[in-house]
Structure formats: C-alpha cells, structure tokens
Length: 405
Image 1 (cartoon, helix red, strand yellow):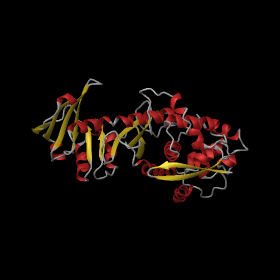
Image 2 (spheres, rainbow, N blue to C red; image 1 turned 180 degrees about the vertical axis):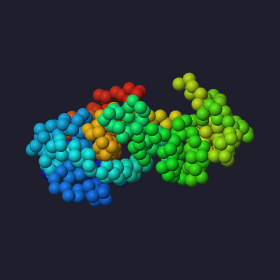
Image 3 (cartoon, rainbow, N blue to C red; image 1 turned 90 degrees about the vertical axis):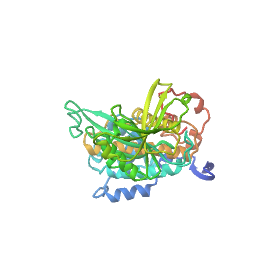
Image 4 (tube, one colour; image 1 turned 120 degrees about the horizontal axis):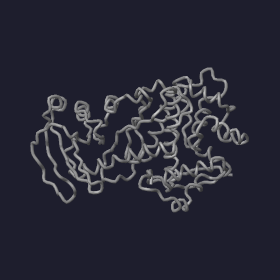
C-alpha cells in the first residue's frame, strides 16, 4: 500500500510517495541518486573484478555506521548481521563481513566517494539557495577554515604533522546560506592553511570570510582580480598608510572605516591597490577586531556583521566531530581514512537533503537522533521527523550548532 504526502517545496509542491512498510534506512537512502553513484564507480573502476560486496554495499555499511554512531567495523557488521531478514529490504545485496568491509575501505578508490559527495553538495546547494541569511544580501557568502584531527603516529605515519604525533586537516569552504560545505580538501597536518587558496577558484561577486591564517596579500590580490570579495582579520604588525577616513556611527561599535594602501616592502608589491580597513568593537566579547576587505560598497557595519557570521564554520566543525565518525577511524591507511571521511560528508549532506525535502522543522541533531534509534523500523519517515513534539523536547545550548533551523 502506498501513501502520498504533499509537501511544500519553495513556491511549488513536491509529491513524495513512501511505502508504509518500507524500512526507515531504505526510505532515507531513496533520497540518493544511485545512477550518479554508479557513474562515480565506473569512473574509477570501483567494481572491477569484484564478484561480491560491491561499492554500493560498502557505502551503505559505512553510512549505517555514521547514522547509528558505530565505533568500529566489528560493531557495524554485528549490528547489521543481527537483522539478516531486513538487510535485503535495506538495499544490501551482498554478504557482509568485517574482513570484506575492511578490505574494501583499504582498496576501493576514495575518490569514488569524494566525487559522489560533490554531486550531493550540488543538489543540497540548489535546495537551500533560497534560504534566508542573517544579512539581507543577494551574493553568496562563504567561510573558509580548517580543523585538525589528531592521529596516532605509529598507526598513521603517512599523516605528517609533528615529531610525536600525526594529524590530518579538513579544509572546508562553507556556504553560509544553508551551512552546506561547497569545497572540502583533506591534507596532512603540516599543510599550511593559506596554501588552500591556491586550490580554490573564487566565484566572482561572492564573499569569502577568513581568519588571520589566510592573511597572504599575494593570494588575496588574486581573489580581487577574479572579481570576488574577501573579508579577513588584519594582523597587528600590518604596515599601511591611511589615505582617508569615512564617517561612522560609533554607537554601533564601529571604531573606524578607512581607505588604506599597504606600505610593507613585500606587501606593497603583493597588493598594489587600495584596501579598506574597518575596526569594530564587539561588546559581547569585549574585544576589538580589525578587518581588511576589498569591498568598498557595503557599509562598514555590514562588513563587521558579515565577518561575525564566520563563526558558523567553527560550529560546523564542532558538530561533525561530535555527531559523525571522523575522529575514530576504522582503518589506518590513507585510503581508508579518506573513504570514511568522505562517506561521513555524504551522510551529512544526505540528512540535509532529506530534511529539506521532507520539510521538517526539527534540528539536524534531532533529525539524526531520530534516525539512529529507528533505523530498522518500518515507519514512515515523513511522519516520524515531522512530529511537533520533537521541537519542544530538545533544548540546545549556546555551544550546540543549530543547522537548518
């Protein structure tokens, strides 16, 4: 028997048809475009000479581990094999064993899942493109930052960081309209943050919010030449000359709004054009911030408030570390680690997509909690995640990221 639900979606309406007896995990996976996944597999010959346990089975196992907060391959396989009568209906088509899953993580090209994550990101960005932003701004606003994941040196010697430990860095460009990661790069811990600017291709007209680690004027000038805008924290030893000052309202917290030119021996050559310097006092943190930007059109207060939105990427890193398995790894090779991280990203985007298409008002945290405890149940996902009671039972602290609310 089928049930039809009419769900608001932008200005139009989508019809989502769910089987009332379909397992919840299968309903969630149905939001994934499998034909796009098969394209990624074919691109890297992921199923070449594979007679059992294909890439899709590997993906489903690792996605299940992320959703249900499993801590090891053994725990993941044990939970799945405890429900053998439901595995086929959940989408699994092969026998599941710990050794087979471990081998797949070690040997299947991680780029399969990286490419698939990018496809899901493009779908999610299209869904969230009309989301309201805290500032009335039509242009896209990105926050760029990285987070370090510490590893054991003896088990992960390839992830170079320091003499006594290993680490990897997760460089992320977050679209603040919807909190969707637009770009992700995984490097070893020694890779300097500013070097990621050599990989990014800025979009003309977009804003890029960055902290002082990205204060390289040669690279910032390239962003300017491509027609994009940046807002970056200024270093205290920056040498410059003020050309003129603009009027400000000091009651808003603004201290100055200046047009400057760099006077340092190297910085003057790296960035030969004018820049804008905005100083702002944050009464909440009781701290003064100085920003450098190449945008001369927005008012100074908007520049300061835009940079304040950069905090969303810090919360994003905190959320994924708390609720996804990206700190405890199921394998020790570079391929296994990157495979697990990219599938975790896929799960994050999948939840964002399904939450949007189901028009659910619950927080992302609550959405994931509901799925984790009901994954084997035969209950309609739309009814489960649109229950109004969930909105009042969970109260998040100021340190908890409220994504997609």
